[in-house]
Structure formats: C-alpha cells, structure tokens
Image 1 (cartoon, one colour):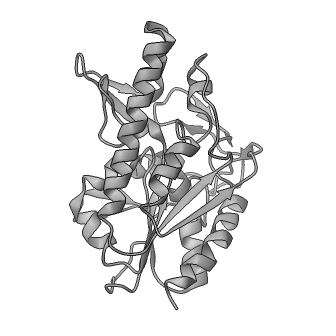
Image 2 (cartoon, rainbow, N blue to C red):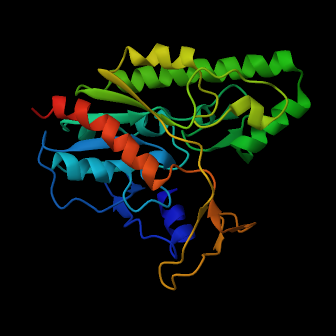
Length: 281
C-alpha cells in the first residue's frame, strides 16, 4: 500500500518509499543507511503512522527530537496480523531500543466469513472473491439480521485482540501502545450502516478491546487530535491546487478529509517524547 500511496500522491509529496527486501514490503523513507542493534527505534502502524499528505509525520519528528534513527513502518490498511506473520520484521523489532505500536483498525482482522492477510481487504470464504472491507460489511448488514451481524463483529473483535496479544507477546523490547485518533475508545456501534458500525478510526475498536491489549505493553499513550477541517492539497511542482486520482481511479481528490494533519503529528510527537526518553536514558 505504501507504493500505491506514492503513485497516488506523487504530485503532492515524495514519501521516499523503499523496498525492505528482508520482508518483501515497502516502507516510507528515508531509508536508513545502517542500523546498529539497540540504537534505533521503530514506529508500527497504519496510514496514520505512515503520514499520508504529511511531510513530517510523528516518527520523523521523534527522530529529530531524540536524535536516533526511527523507522516508519506505517502501512496503509494494516492491522496486527500484517506484522505478526512477517518473522523477519520481528527480528528487527527485537533489536530496537523500543517500539511504538499504533492501535490499528479492526477492519484488518478476519472472521469466519471473510479471510484477511492483515490489510484493508478480504477474501470471501464462500467463493474466494477479493472484496474491500467496507463492501464486506455492507454485504453483511444487507444480507443478515442484526443478531447475526453482532455475532460476526464479536468474532472479529476476539480475533483482533488475540492477534494483538500474540504480536505484543513476541516483542521482547519496551513496547509503547499508541492510540492516535480523533475519537476516544469508548464508542458504541450502531447497525444502521457501515459508518455507524465502524465508528471513526480505528474502526470497530472499543475501550474493552484496548484494555485487553494494554497489559501486554509497557506504556499506553493517547493522542486525541481535533476533527480535521478539509485540507487543500497543493501540487508541489506548480504550487497550484492538486487533482489526484484515487487508487481505484474512480474519483478526484482535491482535499484531505481523513488523515491526521501536520499539526496532529506534532501533537503525537509531543505526547510520545517523554516516554521515549525513558528508554534512552
């Protein structure tokens, strides 16, 4: 997904995407020249950690504040399973000074109807057809009664918690669990449509789920940023408003309505800095 973001957003920003060959994944740069064991840190997460449309996302800002290399392992649409299933990533994580792990969306987690590879899409178990998460849950709401939908949502949440617990358990260095959202974790879903079911990012995640994984981390930090005002996207080559085709080529993007703003990333870096120093001193 990182490489897709770069193709989509090229006229607005250069994410300096590089290929992390050991795990065959693409991450946001700049690519580190050399990593000395226990002399770097890693930020793991989804598009919010990656920093869509942001020149200096919070991993970059923390690197400036702490003066150590910090890898940005944000991957759009990712959940805990994306990182858990890549053993080589765990090798690098466990040689870091500390790791910051974003609380990621529940849409990335599979269930008995939809299989997931830990990213923002599913494979329908009944016929093997690939389907977006949003379309899968639209399908679920349209075809089944609320009782059955609640059953699948509950199954998905249990799977998400178990995956997070397993992933965190495999990390042997200090772990900072990070809630980075425009909402608090205590939301209540409604079953009218996908928006009311998901809630704002991280979709499907509630306070009970967070409490179940917090005990597997060393620290828990929250950054609740203001709801975004639409941000006009500017073409970095012309200085004029940008017109970006989305990754599906179905609509034109002129404003960012969704991702954390540069100001939100500054907030994130500020709230994380103090706890990070604890593991450097």
